[in-house]
Image (cartoon, rainbow, N blue to C red):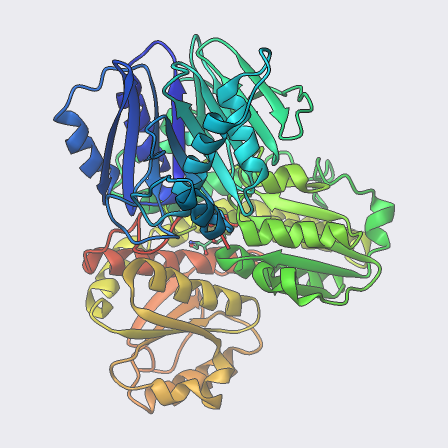
Length: 616
Ligand code: M6R
């Protein structure tokens, strides 16, 4: 959460920083601010609300400097006020700092600094760190070889507990920037006569595709022309410069009204990109380049464990279903946030997977570390190349769907479902799945993009349904087997972008409690695909109908429901079981999107949320 960007170079800093903040806004949008060095002092502007508000403030003044920092905030410590917005200045005015993360021991830092006559203008943890840097700068002696600015940041960080990605400027050192990370993402973009530090690639892609992904415990010093990276313990770090493979257009909405809409309609292409080059020559199994796990190792695995958060966890739950069905191997899924603390006993021959679009979710990263600490190999399914999770995992599978910017995950989710289905095939073919079954499975997976295209054709129809249901306060999503996690996902999507209370259940669980909620005011979205339990699902629908609950039924082609049972019908293409969760996701994504539009909600930036959750 929180987006940070620092620029030092030859161009005007403010317009570039504002542009970068807009691209980082999905990380947090409670307030935004900039500090630009000009005429020997820091010009600081901060405003609650969106970057657009800040932009209006910036337009009123002349910010001409070529060295500055900017921040877009997701509030943790201290309310959403202009004072609590970043950048923060030290009370002696020498330092300006932006921070993403949580300084857990800020209260004791603050108490100590108050005793030393430092003052505080905000309620934030970040300001305590900024004053601590000023304190070390004023107090600590340095040798002639040491840079006083860099040394004081390093010394302050040695006392900081918690997580941080910071960028700092110092009045006495114009044109120099110091940044460091621990638990919060940070990259260094290497431009032509300019250097940029940011939370992620989207903020810098307009200027450069050459980046260095910083690691935890590293501190970087840079000017417009040079940079040096060391660890906090002063060990030299030889940086690896990576090339970003996507461009500015990938991170823009184009003709779409929202990123979420764009990303929903991009799914056929995203699925093609996820699959590309990943099937065997005989088209009977999947191939993954980066698993770093031999077939012999895979063959010895007796259990798979998947950890993730939110939407990614729902993808893990579908994967569980498919691996158990097609590879006949037990799978366990857990919330990463629970796994990291519950000290679960694990079977010896367990292979661990984490799933994360951003690769920065702190709970998922912590689960990965916990599993590694216990001696397990951990593989990551992840979209963002070079993310913390990708770098700390022992191997993994990149999703290749390009940047996902809408806070509500859509294309990353269906891509994760596809990778889960491919994994089930890969493991299944090492066990009992025949060549013929493998070929049919691969053919089915290859058809997924077209089936999704077909499901997307329902958009105008679903938009009409959305108009009829947008006023409801509660909604249920009901599915069975591999579509139960899609019911959970449908409920999550609706909640997060339209603020309608929604819950997902296995359809048959209704009668064990949730049915008490049913009335003409609480619609139920049912998944009713063809299959051996269709009649059971129809019985659950009857139970809802008997209690006057409106029913929105998502059926596969060929399914016939009793006359009058469904108030609304959405028909999706019939398909292989491994592809069904992908295709069935489309109508619930569209339904949530159109309901949110009807309710006038800010779809891409729902209240209280941020795209990547890098605090606990
Ligand atoms: O980046 P990750 O996949 O690790 O993110 C996990 C969740 O925070 C995320 O899926 C969240 O639930 C989304 N807002 C759902 O749309």
